[in-house]
Image 1 (cartoon, rainbow, N blue to C red):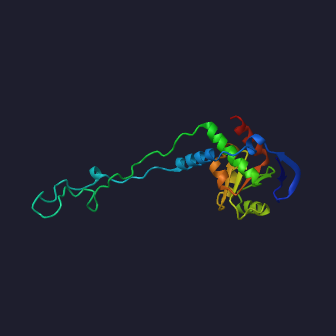
Image 2 (cartoon, rainbow, N blue to C red):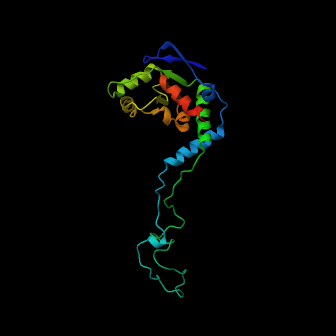
Image 3 (tube, rainbow, N blue to C red):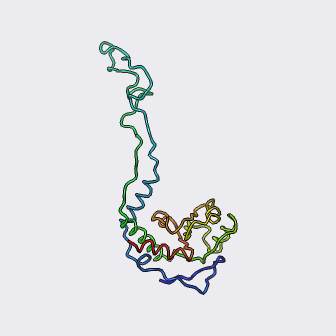
Length: 210
């Protein structure tokens, strides 16, 4: 699959990039994508939720009333779950939600996600560029030139470029990542994926090692 390289003005240049069929042209595996997205979202969870159980509530442990003769139900102390302010039964406790996913499954998921985007013609290649200083306005001009200002966009850089990252981080529905940090969730969540020209080779080398 050949994709024309665009310049910063959104116009096609004379160059073309051939996308590897082993990365951008495989038969997508939906279950691998599901597992990788599930793992990614689980790893984002802090797991710091906590409610107090009966033994953690501040209060007297004295029996509220005598066992018999009141005409009402038996009652223990004020920390019982049935009373307001008492402990919570089977409440949440801090835990780690992350789970391990085999590297081959993760690589297959990323290849599958990229193949879906390639089939949908949602991949664009942009010639290498840089900003002299962080300028959100300049980044917006780039998106407008590519007709992507109103779409979820993922920009993949070959390596960290501070000025580009700072320029794009405050723009809604836009994310900037690097070739070695690309993940299935970001690819599937984006309407369009823009690769800076030199990042394509890095992504292909990364995923072809599997």
